[in-house]
View (cartoon, rainbow, N blue to C red):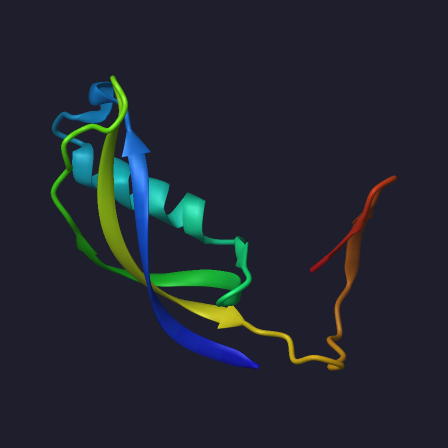
Length: 100
């Protein structure tokens, strides 16, 4: 089943990204870190459709890294137990096969 959900995600940025292109960097990093992930709670996040809000950077937990919270909306796929999914295998290696 496919669902449209809202996710909260926190990215870690180095201070060198804090410049005029900060929002573009944060949006690109949110897209790349969230798309294609799999979580036990939500299933597979297929695509990020929109970025709703980007919060202010918080006080750094580690020296040199600053956490920036963001909220994204995207499509997810949650396979049902015993369900069958059609896929095309794009890559096979020693450890796994990669369907598309």
